[in-house]
Length: 171
Image (cartoon, rainbow, N blue to C red; front, side):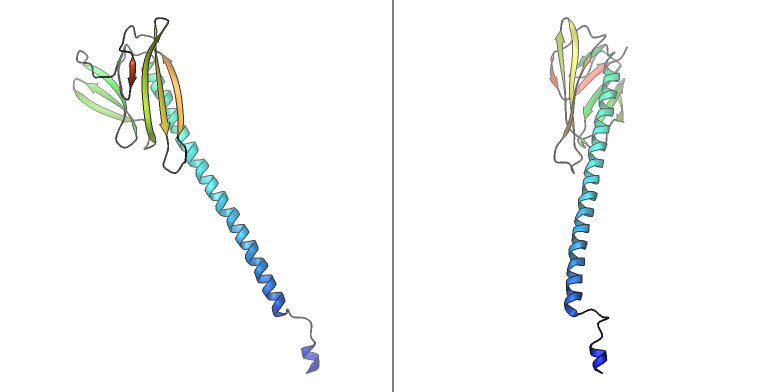
């Protein structure tokens, strides 16, 4: 019976408790790294999506307005066909086509545009349209913004100013 009690092949209770405590610490650290990595990836993915949508909207605005013949902050009474770029109530950037009073809309972005603005200015007898877009998908702490200026190739006159919505005609 003494030989059984002197058998050193097993673990003592103290050794088991130390092993379980160390395993708990390692598991806690592992979960912390996993959670941090997952959160970082999610934030990075959100930032990339917002940046991509804002840049795509910026390119579309530039290609739409660069060769516009007229720009204004209000609708044209003397034009049968004109266009409008605006931010709707759901934080989407929209291009409206107004054809003889009938409006059709094309969505440029998802629900990420938190603010937008257009400024028509004149420099050296040339008209420039400066626009700013701010995007955020509500998971990010900071807005992503882009500011761009477009030389308006065909605009000869216009009301200078800052607007939230811009109306324009194409050649």
